[in-house]
Image (cartoon, rainbow, N blue to C red; front, side):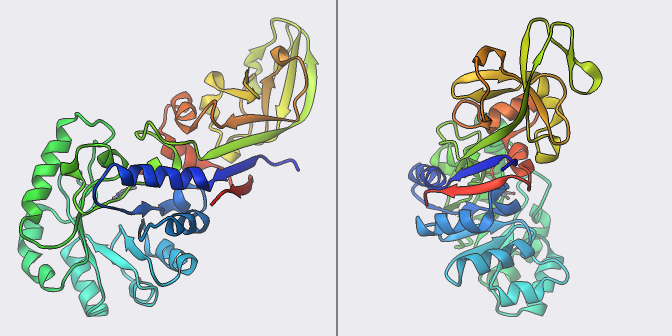
Length: 345
Ligand SMILES: *Cc1c(COP(=O)(O)O)cnc(C)c1O
């Protein structure tokens, strides 16, 4: 076995969903787009459905079709991108609920699939998806006449609870949805952690389920152990890796491990990143290559069989900080080569 071993803890995932659910008085969905943030949509969604999740969100209809096959007929599957050209068969056959983003989408939907359920996505200020106030005012009556299943909007700054954008979007969303009588949804993970005004009828957490910020109390879900292929002694003055960026300043022991930037371990995180042998941190030595990384194991005192990049000691947000990015990007970059194992669930 020479690929990294990625272990996904379904009990931790379920505990995170339950903990976010317990913070609100409303229903809690699960966002499983992008293969459940890289962790495997079918396994993740089945574990959450077993724990009681009934509503799931995906980005595109293709993901919704795959999710329907994984979950069977009972779950509600909402599609953020709405009803795109060519999606009618998938939406119809797989009983997906498109979140309609524009008048064009609304017309496309009711013409292609009259009577088929849909939701409405409103833009409350992020300017990414959804109908703006004018457009919504124009179609509101017609749309409400067709009994939408859900009306939602999305917060741009929910990772900063005190940001004034949150209150501004809340006010806009309230204004746009007043007297609709339709179930409402505004909160993703960040919104779940804000006060009850933001919760409405359904929350839509993603990253918090997978152990990422801004859910501080999340349990870590992923562990990544990378096998050591070879170890060697490096004398003071010798260098390690491409570009000679690391020069040994003492008698050094280097382990070469079987993963690299092709597996989502971004090159830029190298200088700040360590790997763990039990609780001993071992710094990356030199540049991260495509399939290999040199690690300084001198202080460990023995040659380990593998080293841990992700786990309780160092989580996705630590790696994200090292790489100048966010936990979402670390998770969705996790490589296809890893040997994926699921525990719990
Ligand atoms: C991705 C996404 C979510 C989930 O967001 P998290 O920050 O991962 O909880 C919710 N709603 C929309 C519209 C999204 O695009």
